[in-house]
Length: 611
Image (tube, rainbow, N blue to C red):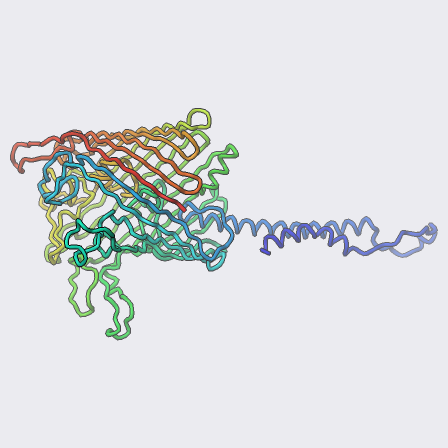
């Protein structure tokens, strides 16, 4: 029996126990008046005894009530602090040693003309399929992949648990690992598949493992864990069945409920080990080392942060809506990241005896993110804005040739609203607007590493030329020493083709997206959206002179049964605009742009089982 149940039982039995313990009194006999006047002071009357008993009972009841309030407050705050970790915890279930959740998905795609008939950019990169040669970039491709994701929870006790995320056959392409040439001279004869061995992906990928301990004052979490915040444009765990990206952080954090301040806030300080720099591999031959060791703290990247949040779980939100109430969630995230030195290459592991060259990086940045969400029976409105301010003292990989300082001035935001129409709110009309800061340097800036050759020591980086699809966003030769393009988290899906398949994620651009969803039956809906996208700076686009990127129409149907079966079918059509034309003239020559041809199309299907 829990302590709470014991207190409830005591509260119910207490009045009866008190009455049973009261002294029994015999019926009073008739006493002459003269004896009463002559008698000493009489013992307390029955009324006085009853009054004293009642006061004693009331004191005990008040004490029990206070204990009940403390107990219930502790349980509520404990549940809230647990909810703040991922924002998706359900009601506490009966303790089981092992709980298994997750999904299995099977996906198939048909892509048509995703390269839009364009040649490679000045750096040799195609809009679709990167630098792949020897294959058509403008035809039709089909293919599929699969993944089994298991999210086990090991409940050591009601207060202590271990959680993990493990992917089996993680995005293994269908048909990608046929029985090899030792058995078949030609892959034409392959009739079976073998387990993947780093051909495209590992057969088993342990994505996250972390521990949680529910203490009397909050939830302690530590390990490699998912990071989720607000709408997900900054930190996004990527837990959806049709997502490929997601943030995993090496973190220790403590979620502390702070009472009913502003509706019940939780204070969550945390520390992230973002990068360990050079590490040594432990071996039996190395005296006293049986584990990998961080060679020096000087090249580490660390981030200290805090979140202050008040957020309803999905179950809490459902209850409020059923009662005719609205749900309000909001929060503030702040963190500070820094690095003193960096290695002159990206080799992150070395024997203890090797000489390591360091660059005085002197980098730091502060991030502030605000989000809010209001949900009622008919309306929903949510927003998130983020800003990053900092600098990189030396952006070079060559200790002999410093470059900097490079300023970091980034900002982004998204606003989304929905309204439910008709009987039962089955027709949902909505709109979304998003924007991410940018600059006038060539390339959108989602893949700045394209400008670098990581096979050399030190690494050599060359700024991209006008008309490049992507690349480094600061140019030492032209004095543009800043990185101002904010990048939406790639797990935040805006559309089906332009940002998801071709450009990576929203940066140096804005978009507007009206949406429509019709809930046909329980678990079945059809949806449509139109996405218009435009770059903030024409110099960042492949055309280098035009801003309009494209108009995309996405249609879809989704069904999910009560027992976990999921079916998704989506169709996307992208009409490229002038900004997606490819500049073909050399620097200094009159600008010539080859326009994109036709439309890009994507037919996307998902079969899944959620458990």
